[in-house]
Amino acid sequence: MPPFLYMQDVAFQWNDDTQFRLQIADFAVEQGETVLILGDSGAGKSTLLSLICGVVAPNSGVISIAGVDVAKLNDAQRDSFRAEHIGVIFQQFNLLPFGTVLDNVRLPLKFSAKRKQRAQTSPDDATQLCQALGLPLDILKQRASKLSVGQQQRVAVARALIGQPPLVIADEPTSALDSSNQSAFLKLLFNQIKNCQTTLIMVSHDTQLARYFDRTVKLDDVAHRAGVIS
Image (cartoon, rainbow, N blue to C red):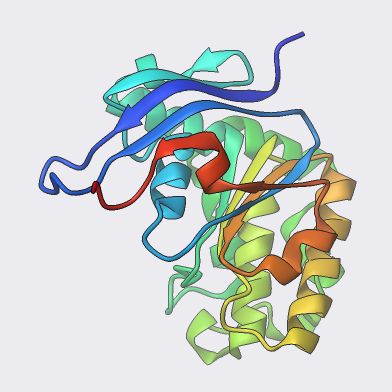
């Protein structure tokens, strides 16, 4: 049985930047696995996530997720696939500032019929998911802009997990937290990842996070060349 996600002979270069090129020879992740990808700033971690999410398409190669080669999809098809299959936790959270907590958490359901159906028929309804992540009931109707950084972060996690997408991508979500809050946040995140039976791929420069994951991968170990071309 093929891995849940695999990348083979992937090459990508930004059109307006001839100095950056990312090449992934071979990278695979199993269903339900939690994987941390480590790399220095500018090494290509966020670019790698953008390729997996289908935000950008590779110049060449295979990016297979759940049996679908997303590299062969057009822009609209990649957007649709991402909405159905991938939850994203952004580094800056990217919440709608004037939307309520529940508005933000339920946002992916507007773009995915499958996730909406699962959210309505399973325990990960928005309110229950928020409570499981430590968000009190009395703030769920507050605007996201009124929340603390820690609360916004948990809303971002709830939004990524709503509707049980098979894959969650996280771009340095703990970078703004101290070690104590970081540990508490990761415990909540992994509890919900386990409950939802979701595959997690997180990128970071922080080697201290490795103990929380099934596997840690250094970007340099899977990339032929990442960052500035010498």
